[in-house]
Image (cartoon, rainbow, N blue to C red; front, side, top):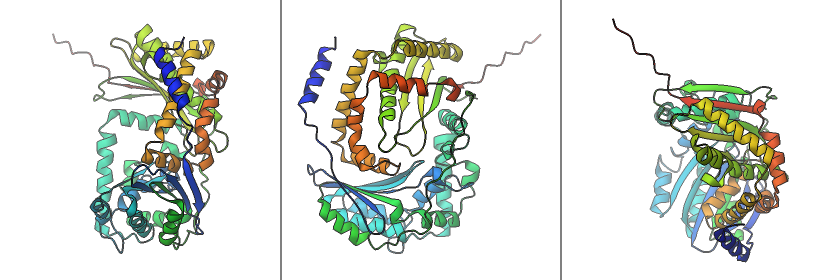
Length: 448
């Protein structure tokens, strides 16, 4: 029987209207895609420009150039001095930032709705008029090298993750870190950055997302005024990337580092991404991750390993399907005190075998379906999160219709769908299993 709390949550959700996002989409004559998400509850707006280029689109030998250019985009234009972009945003009561991933690079501001035209003016300016001084390039190259030093080289778990990803993708550029390999980062030049900029930073490679207290017709007029006159890039090519060959055997690695505070086991499997018009398999994998590695006793691995056998202190499973190419489905655990990684892995395999034999627990599945419905409803209250959702999807090959259909696709999934996805993906021959641990203690010397 479901708990009283779950029953009450379910009744509350049934009473909520199935409000669809108020989304308007159009494309400018120069190829720039525009998506407007209306939310009139507060006089604020999120303005985001997403480029369909990321670390997986970099030329060979130039890893880190997408992230490097993201930094250099704040160094000024012919009209706006170095660092002035962010100062103007702040002076107008807003905030701004940017990020780079494997499939996209995005720049965004959150400001009062009546400042939207100013944000478009600033962003359109740096889409075409970036200027780079030699000293700025050298300084910013040192900044990204120090960022790598702090976030990766000085963090054994980050190095472990980087090595596992490189083992996962033998041929696909998802195996290259977004920040880049150090030896290639050190050689990045001003010419590299400008070539990348002139090729990819163009309206026909961009998606404009505007979310908040806006009118679609007004957004269209502003977009045509500020972005419409920008010439499209003639050098853009289809995003044809090297793909993975069939994996025929499990890959294993052990990363040892004296700085490791807690040993860990991580296993990742190649898994399909969300595809336009065909999202059910990704939705089933979303449920599978929650079933296997959700919170504590409310998950298969938590129940078996943390509570029943007490072989693990922590367990998790995660899957994120919004990517252009094949993604991963990942299991992780931290063994309990006195439990070796080998013993923890054996317990993990046993728990997985039992799940594959017994199937999905219907009560747990029903509770997860309610939770996912709730999370989809509550997500609509965060306009910046909603803008990110559309931007990431549209730069990963999905459409507005796919984003809007996703909540209903999730609700359509059955336990049978989940088990079919589990049998397809959870194959050790398609996995990378990694151990993170401290070096074995050397025996003490015996003195006579």
